[in-house]
Length: 126
Image 1: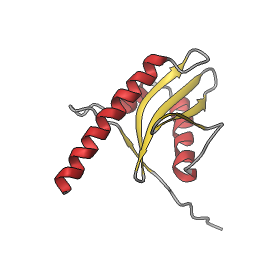
Image 2: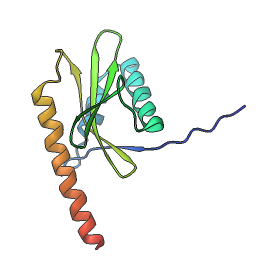
Image 3: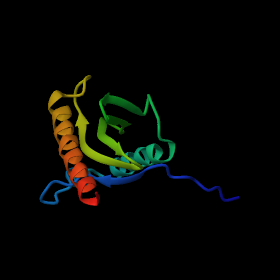
Image 4: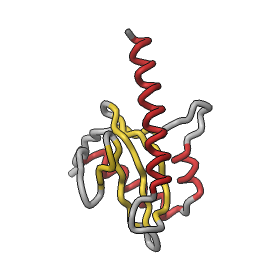
């Protein structure tokens, strides 16, 4: 029996003004198993949104993290949701108990830029 799965969110990578996609670039640096595990957890969020702990934690206004346990370390992917899109803002390997302020600052700055771009698009659509 084939069971259909409803995808609640589509996923896209945050892109800088010059087109760089930092999360995609970070993922490319990881090993195949790590990429697979991270992809599976992101897919779980896509299908099950909205989700909470232990997989997803709210980090601030419109900012969430996917909490991923890899074989020998811990990864985090910080994201936002705009409409029905999950936008991947920042990814990193966690080295301490708390999420480092620098990583939160990077994600927050990208979120702010993303919101500015989205507002400009909305104005153009009128």
